[in-house]
Amino acid sequence: MDLGAAAKTVQAECIATRARQAARVLSRIYDDLLRPTGLQVSQFTVPIGAARFGEQGAPISTLAEKLVMDRTTLTRNISPLEKEGYLRVARSPTDARVKVVLLTKQGERALQQGMPLWTHAQEIVKQRLGAQSSARLRAELDAALSALDEPPASKA
Image (cartoon, rainbow, N blue to C red; front, side, top):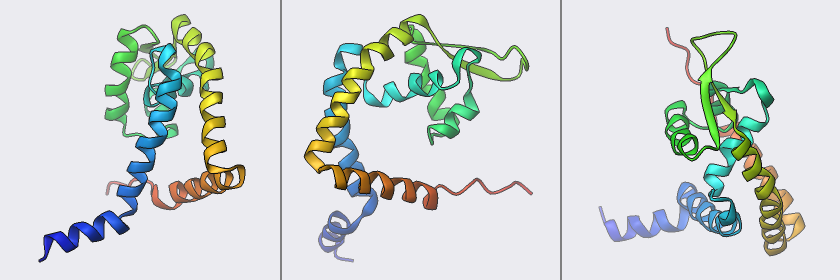
């Protein structure tokens, strides 16, 4: 096998590589603007996800599903956010076997500070891509997520 030719093919054609490159560029834009909150965009999405569930909190498995993350990865990502005081993990009041993620007051303040910054990042991305391209990209990404994120196989 000619590894040089293989490398060129992967660099030119690999959808995963291109998606990761685009994600890194997008993350830089959002991270730069979210810096005053102390959160990176990859972290910002976790308290945003928890906020969707209100005061009852988000069961970790449900939050992982909504964020399209592996549960163990989400748990690893929650840990520093909990240490910094943005989130709190507790037992569900209705089922002690279930852990829920709760947004703290500090987390609420970070999201309130972060939302205008996130909005500004959105505007920058839309401006650079153009409104129509932004809408098409979002639709294509939604379609890709739907097509590629197969539910786990049931255990027999």
